[in-house]
Length: 171
Image (cartoon, rainbow, N blue to C red):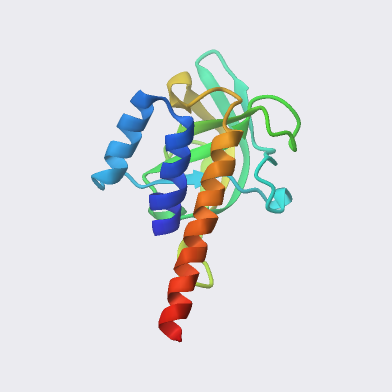
């Protein structure tokens, strides 16, 4: 899943994560031992990067994530999810969004896989009481929006370049 796993998620990790987290996450992506994809989009977002209703509530051992994600590019092939969840603020505010590493087989996570019109794979996720530890936070609590915005812009550029290449070849 090139766009989701080789462009979008790694770019967001580069922008949001600490140096140690980058070393850990990206080394495994680069050596092929991990397929990490972003779970960010939601039905009500309508393309707005800052819109996140999925919540992450503090618990004694970390956080509990509840919400729904849609069109997770490369979701069926993922070995690790990078989930955007709101730790504070209102659903349409840029602040208060936090990134969490989540195992695709975590208790409370249900995944529905499907094929997109271009035959690539995607998933919808339902997260109901998914427990994560504080060590699963990627970057700063509440500070993920700039990385999500920049990563999304870079993924759009990559998708456009792919489309131009396809059109050039077709012509």
